[in-house]
Image (cartoon, rainbow, N blue to C red; front, side):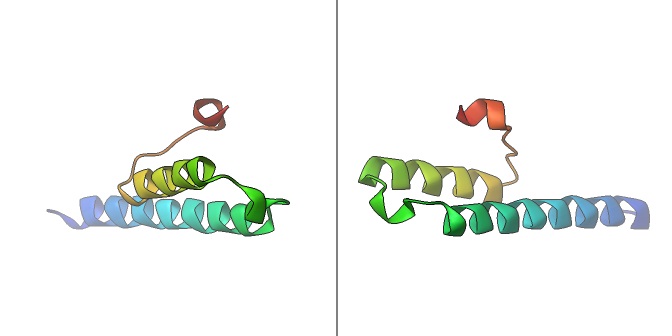
Length: 63
């Protein structure tokens, strides 16, 4: 791998990390988070796992 490819990969990983941080912040600040059902919590866990794998999601995918 060349330096430019490594740089692109690093930038992509940093973007994913930023998305995860924003998602976690929104979840932590979500009114009623403690009242979510087990199913809803599982859905959030699945979204976070997908993001960890680099699978980006859009808001349209969630709605």
